[in-house]
Image (cartoon, rainbow, N blue to C red; front, side, top):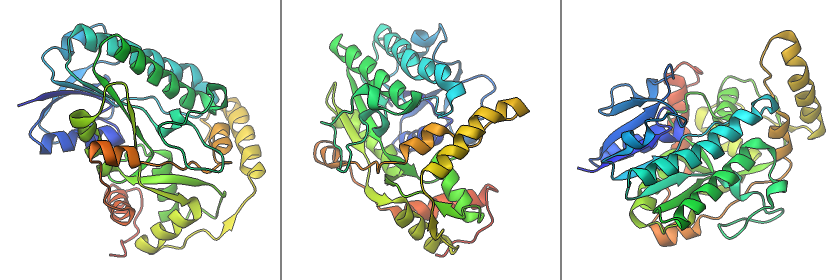
Length: 332
């Protein structure tokens, strides 16, 4: 029985990857920070290693593992978190991959993001495209780009590491929730009077989880694979979600300058009043361009397959309802 070491297992994508591993008969050793919210792991048959990406015992914890799935990332778009984001995602990845090399882990799957690829203005991007680093908006995108450089450097040193780039996952176990999960919760609770005109590539989180296993089995060392599905405007996505959840979709779009101004005020003024900001400037800046991607390489080389967004939306809505985020009944 194979043993996987998983970072980020308490999070959204990681919790789904762990469930996929267990369903396929793997044993799992999951890294979790002391005091972290581990409810996504409740009831699962796995071993938990308490620590983080700066822990000195990483190499020892990785010994005997057949695979490393490095999914952990610090996600924040707020300016106050920039240093922490860069350290966790870029420096943390370098430290972990060095530990994997010292422990002689046979194969690593690094979870990057389409954020590291960037936006191909007015077109659909694939793995061959790369925005100039200075054009990547915000510390999070730049940190994921730098973490990919660390993965590629490790591959050049002889570590067997392949990279996956999920787009915008939808589904259960989105406990934080992610920004997209937060959009769904706001839709379900009637707290979304208007939207901005933008677009994203959406995908079922379970498809992303299976894509991780496909990358482990068939991914090429030093290559990256986009794990995505449908390119949709935000308006079209919310219309589908609203129809499934039987709620009203937002009808109006606001100009980008309005939420941008609100975000600048929120990020600047909130600390003065001792509260955390709720709207990030970088989040609004990102929405100015549609973020569309092409997953054909993963389909061709990994056998990656997708199961459709409607089911993913249903499962996400059901999970949010069951876990107290909203009380909206499902349409189906």
